[in-house]
Image 1: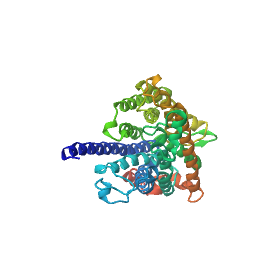
Image 2: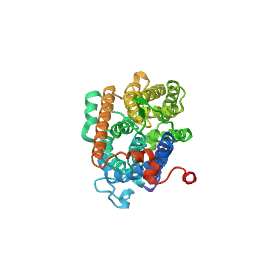
Image 3: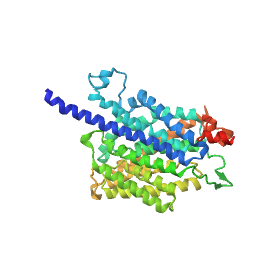
Image 4: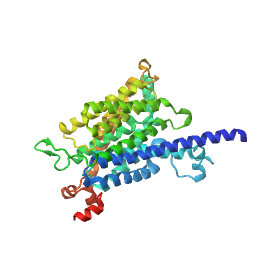
Length: 417
């Protein structure tokens, strides 16, 4: 390569590094959205725990994914010199991209991996022990999630090749409706069921309403997630050459569809409205790069209605004390998103084509089944060894005081004591 050729190449590599870095930062910022969505939904005595849990889970996820998870998913480890990692020298077994592009790719994909425990956190809020959940995070992000991630996004074990050979296309999940959201939601289902319901949640077989502590905090969490989601979806292209405005448009319309149907089905409930936006975004992740915008609008609209209906059904009919409704929001809407990609990605419906509905159905079912079994396995093991639930006394006092020895408003607490 001549010096003249090297300048455009460096600019291209540097542009991709910056592009991925901005994506990583946007998705990292979404974790504050998870935190504040939970802070606003739980009772006041559990707000501090929500904030600490999600921040600590991110730190543990980073370690687990750095040393083990990324290796399982993509066959890449980082035990090399800084020169190799930055792409200045060839690495044994792996050629790292120039200017450390693979390093920011790790950061970007880490933020996806760390979303799994952040999703679970909302389901198990107000009664889960802290350190067993930290251990669950390490197991899930280090082992459970990367196995399925590598299967879909790296073609591990040839499953995608089999689907392509049999049905004409692999399982398509552009930004993680199934790989991230459905997996997180179905793992959470096992955790929620094994934990049991919160004290006082049901009396004489009837649901007792626990009002959210702060609708402004809840809405802030939703806004932060919505904004960051455009990094989650658009920047899943992972380089400037592949970026598509179609993804941004589809994300926008799916979000709007989720808001409007949740507003109508949820009878103007603000909690449903703010979560309905997220339901639409969850569902469109898989097919955001191949759908027509009208298909994305329908996909998000269906997801908003699914979330409201299944949240109420699971709480009132199934007795599932899923505090933030993560099984409905991420598990079921993510599952729908995987299938919706196979419907609205078809060229006959204005999509870009190259998609197999059969592969989408099989991939979505496979992801949900794998995650559901993994959730029961991980949390079942922890329940029968360390225990996963706070004592009745600690739960009554609240996780803030019981675990962290401080409340959300320490000065006010001192005055009232």
